[in-house]
Amino acid sequence: MKKFIFYSLFLCNFLLAQDIQGFWKTVNEEGVAQTIIAIYEYDGLYYGRIIAIYNQNGTLEESIFHPIQRAPGVIGDPYYCGLDIIWYLQQLGSKFKGKILDPQKGDVYAAEVWLDKGDLVVRGKLLFFGRSQKWFSVSSKDLPINFKLPNLNSLVPDIPTPK
Picture 1 (cartoon, rainbow, N blue to C red):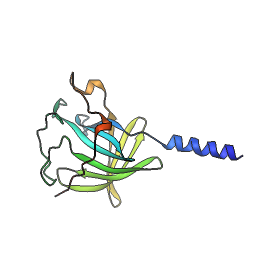
Picture 2: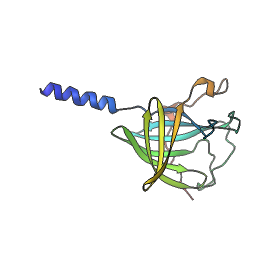
Picture 3: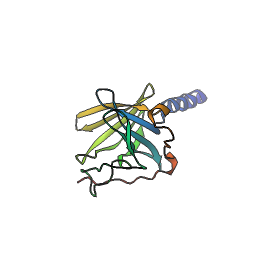
């Protein structure tokens, strides 16, 4: 009986453990690509960094290798590309909870992140109010030819300070 309980708990923890690490594409309400976000693990917590931004036509316009636009809601006006907008995500059951930043306004919200049929659901919340967005796994067709994504294991968090 003890073995059954042990294996049941092990299987339950295995099924709950979901890997959110990877590259995710955000899209607007019309389905046009907006950004590529890297979700990476560092010291047991997860972080999200803007890697690239698409233009209004859905073509990759800037990246961490060629940043253009700056984040007005963050002290120092850093580039959007290369900016950590999600931090301190910790797994609690089937969800991850932490913080998420609106880099344009400088607002920080509670964040909940979870996988749903292979897509990443990201929810920013303030008290009981919130907004969820579905992010999609990045494929080679989402990237220009010869675009090299950064190594997730080389990323180190750099938590921005909102204005």
